[in-house]
Length: 448
Image 1 (cartoon, rainbow, N blue to C red):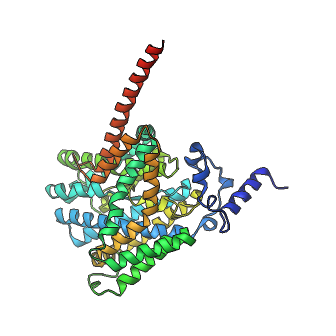
Image 2: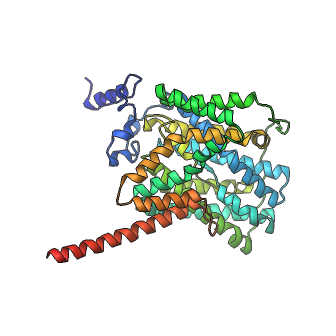
């Protein structure tokens, strides 16, 4: 005899089918209560979880692929700039790329599969930016020692659980505004590409909008295919720099010096936690998940420590690219989006094994193609985040401050705009809340 729980499960499966009504096709997050939306699988028992192959979908796999493509384009160039500033050899640079991609791949795949939520990790772009200006002041073994200590510091912070408690106290509207601000530049980049690649941008956008009307799950996939096909027929792509072959990591013994620990390890840990892990947790929360911050921060910190002798500077939660695999474009059912995280991990591993070829490939690809693909993939998530940010009228001013600060791209004290957006937005929220409370107390005194 079928139980009530089995019946409910069948109802959910039927509602998410191709013949479901539009309001039912929006996914479980749209109709769930706020408490239910925060981590639908966090409290599920192992027996209730489906298998990976049963949950797999083309849209989730493609979301993972696009995430890696975007992660390995612009951010990879920052890593290459840092390697050049540190006067690294070609072998050491390839090993750095190997460690960054393999570390991201292992943590993505394992954490997504274990937690059943789309945990997207990446190598620290703000951390690499810090290294561009400071790596040349130290020897490479000293830098490796600083990478190792930085990873330990992040793991220790994760173990305490303090970081997650602070993040959970931030109002949801401010978190959504931060995410919208992070994604703003990608949306603008889609239309900025009209200058350099108008045909690719317009064809990709038109394809996305046309397919979205009939099959929202595959709209991004078709838009990606259209952009690639249009770009392929346009001359100017030089693939001569692509060196096909496997990359082998190079082990470097760490050296520990006080100057490197103060000048590299501490800034790297602080910037990574503030500019990557904080927005990364916020992105998951904004998409309705309840991540285990202790597990995720500790695991990525330990991965950073383990990969430091191979050149990896920091593995952390992704912020911008995470939105590609955590939103509805990955899958309308939030319980099946973890497949995008697993797929992302696999593609990261493939990229790491071919680290030298990866450097040449992304140097050859037109930057407009990356901008178009990223912009189209993040359109739905941006619109949803912006709507959530403006939903609460009382917190609207704080959300606007958060959005504008984050979208500005300002960097102060080595900390990126996403963190400053949260700080200033939260300060605005506290100031306005205190004023409303004082006004309420005065009204009660008059009434009394």
